[in-house]
Image (cartoon, rainbow, N blue to C red):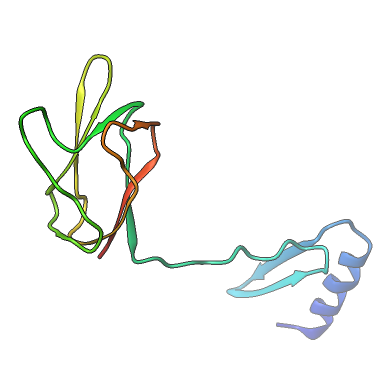
Length: 124
């Protein structure tokens, strides 16, 4: 790309209130960012998968008359039962979306849960 063009674009940027500018021509691209440009958001990776409440209701480990014990460090397979959330009209079954180890068990028997609230974290 032509250095005169880069210089011209940079000088033009100084006369505007733009914080960033990208110019592409014939497959070449320049990107200019001023000090006012917002920083790129941090990218995080996590090996934990959250299992969230599917509805507002009461969490139960199992239906009445059945038992289920979930402990941190326990290995679960994809599709294993993790309890249920009981609403006024329905029981929503919770299953493990991935196989791995239960790293954090937040759900408490008989506890009130809100839609989207993490109940478990599974490490793949």
